[in-house]
Image 1 (cartoon, rainbow, N blue to C red):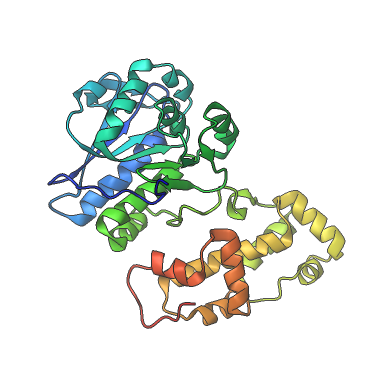
Image 2: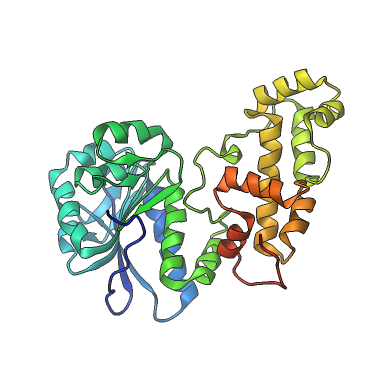
Length: 341
């Protein structure tokens, strides 16, 4: 049985070669997102830089992106020789046409064996599939394209929920910014957690998300309410996580019956009051786990969970990890002794 863990092969001396494949009507962030992660890692790591990043395309020169902004590929596919550490295939509106570009698909297929890691961003997974690289593997892509990916490549095991999936030497990520999350994971694998977290902070990324985090999180689904009273209530919830935020208490503060409040909240914000409150409490707990040395028990109380066990269950539902595991993975510099559970 093939291992689903990242493959660790011998590396070339010097900076690790990272090749990002672009094509006409590529999604610009699928290219520039991972590019900025590796470039920032170079700046923060100092000399010698850990990565040598190249953007390539079927032809050198300007590449039209789906947003209308042009990228410049300094080299063509044929000009890339020698071993590659990380091959990244972007996606975007031009993916369908790129799948018909037989020289491009053939190049990916021929090049894959000399790459230590092969990754895709968003619909770039379709190009990996055309190159025969998804057969029998666990994979993902943007949530809107998962069904199409499974239908076109039935031997792949498409997972619709995670923001990225790593199966052996092939890693696939969900839509757009998930490519940056995957790139940060690769930086951590290469150079350690501290550098990856520094990169995330310099890029002012909201959070370094673990691969198992859902594409369909409440944070992404929730929206601001239309009516002023519910918007004010959303702000109150974020600032008073340790308060009584039950439906009955929130309904009373909104001067509504619990039944009408729940209906109005769900209609305007898109999720139930309980799911929204839990997501806000998880978010508050994540910040404290990342930035303080407070114990897990103390954080559970401060964020309104009350008991550690309750916070554990909420983290499992939202992030698929325990609070202690989350802290060990995402906290760079200890600030005092922390109790992890």
